[in-house]
Length: 210
Image (cartoon, rainbow, N blue to C red; front, side, top):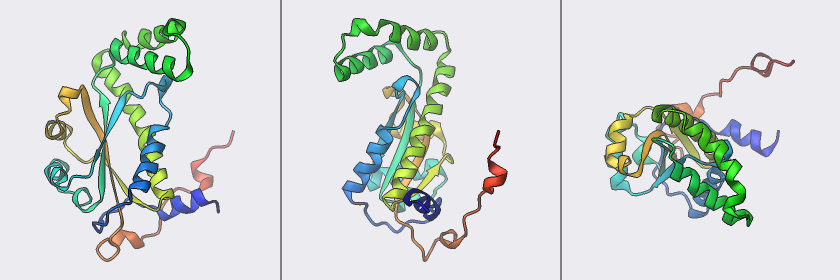
């Protein structure tokens, strides 16, 4: 069994955490994996709020039906997608491509036309849906990276997005919350699910070979 599959076998959606702080190096590695996750065109139409402050996490907890991992964990990541994709978003990305690859912005005109040509014809709601789908790719990268760092994680969709957006002031940032990821260390004494065997469909049933 490879290191990756061994760690994926080790991880589970942790229900209770013990309050231990994650070393900054491990947090940095998890965040870097998220940063390097693929997204459509490389546009990365989302931001991730990295919340360590205990008081802020206490304010967030009621928006997520008092799930304990939010306050028992070390960090909480909130993945928030753009509420719309604007031409400025695309222009900012063109500038980043230009700087990173050492090419003039003018040489990227066709690339911009391809991205903006699609986004400009969609409604704001459809652009948000498209951006939110990109979030889940980054979330997956974060979950895998956490497992490799032997950091427990719990992905969470069980929260009221409107209330969470209000607590975090996301509307002013042009963002809407999509999913959260609690990071910490399992509290084995209080988390019965820590001893459960992982249940997944078999290789034979899951994969259709063609």
